[in-house]
Length: 218
Image (tube, rainbow, N blue to C red):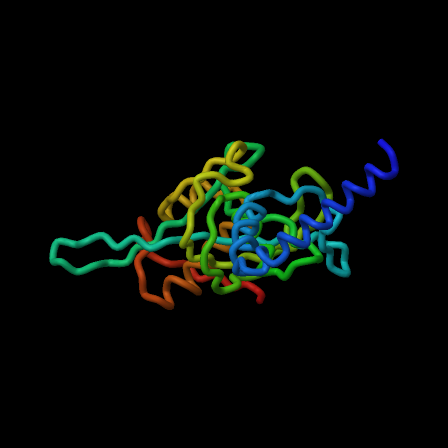
């Protein structure tokens, strides 16, 4: 290809860009970004290049206890609020757990919690109370993790999500959640959720007849 041909192609591309520029300016600014955001939010982050650690070298982990309300009609016509919890299958092992993952340096704790919940469970919603902070040791590595958990009121459930091929998700009542959740610190987060969220709102939790008090650090 001659220098003249290259120059002509560059010139033509410049003319096309100049022609299309006014058209792009007439498109509302939120249209394309909103579509892109919906697509990008369903792609998992990989690697630990941006992983956040505290001064002691503890890996920072953030997650959510996703929940939703059920409002079945009772015989007397009065509605009774009940809560269901969303758990996901572990990638390794047979247990179930709540979505969680690494908190990275380019995002806030809240952003990390929402991102990890979309990636692992395929749901999002209104992020609410922080339930506490726990320290635990990784089963596969001799690394201490510091985990933070939030309550999440789910308002959107995706049919496809990044880890749909490797995880299952299931809405369950409290009794089942306590039974199948494999991580001790997540079970404590669940108890913190029961006390801080459910008792405050005086709502019923499906399958639960009593509440146990758990103290956690905030």
